[in-house]
Length: 180
Image (cartoon, rainbow, N blue to C red; front, side, top):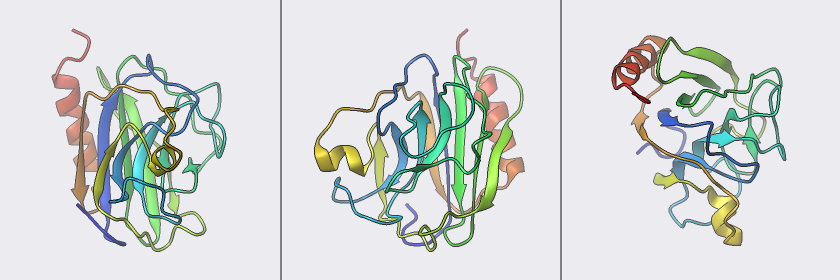
C-alpha cells in the first residue's frame, strides 16, 4: 500500500442502484487507526450523492475523491453517473496531480471527468496505508452509519497508472459480463 506522498491508483466496480446522500461510501487508502485524522491522510474513491463538500451536475451519484476533510470532485460540471454497473477510478501522484475517470462497467470506454492539480491543503499527501471499504475516517470518528453502497471488485496499486493501463482494465471489466 502506498504511504505518505507515494503515488497511487484505485479502481472499483460499483452500482448507481445502491447509493445515498451520506458520508462516506469509500474504497481506498485510509487511516490505520480507523478514525479520523485531519489533513490528506486518506486517498480513496467516493461514489454517491453527498453534496456537503462538493457535487457535480444533476442529482448524482458522482465519482469523487475522499482525501479526508471532505470529498473533492475537481469540477462542478462532472456529470452524474447512473449506469447500473459503474467503473470508478481515482489516481493521485501524491504531490501535484490527481484524476477521476469512470464509465459503464458493461460496455464502452472510460471518460476522464477530472484531471488537474491537487486541491489546496492536499499537497503533499499523507496516506497511512490501511484499506477502507464502505466508510471513511469521518464515519468511524463519529461511529455513524451514513454510508451506503455496493462493491463488486477493485484494486489499489502503487504508482500513477497511465490512461492506457486503466483503459485495458476497463476492457477486462466489460469482458467479465456484469449484469448478464
